[in-house]
Image 1 (cartoon, rainbow, N blue to C red):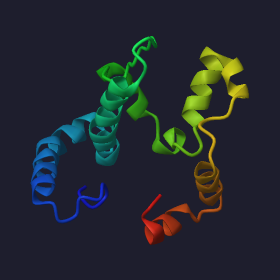
Image 2: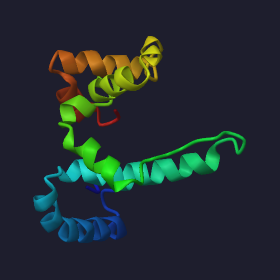
Image 3: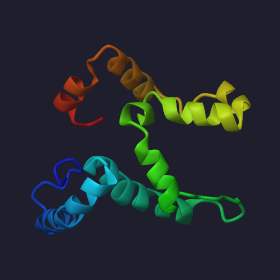
Image 4: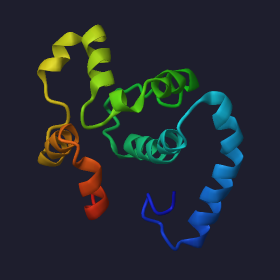
Length: 135
């Protein structure tokens, strides 16, 4: 985990990630979650969403449902290939059901995202990512 998040060699992080893995492994069997999915939701999203709330305009109204265990259970029950950030299959289906007009707008467009999407379709993404480690 420490290597994935670029904390290689940081003893504090390695010890705490190891502690988290030891605590969560038995629970994961009953929940049928992928450990990397759960780690991403707890570590990355937990930190990112809390920072996002601090940085945004105070006049903006927002509802952030990502601390809801039921929603997390539903999202994590969807196979990862449908939740992939580069293809957005699950999210597009959800939007199509809830507010289809939004599908006329691009999903966070940028060159990196489009490149990742087409590399995945060609089966080259993970090999290139391992070589570059910057994506």
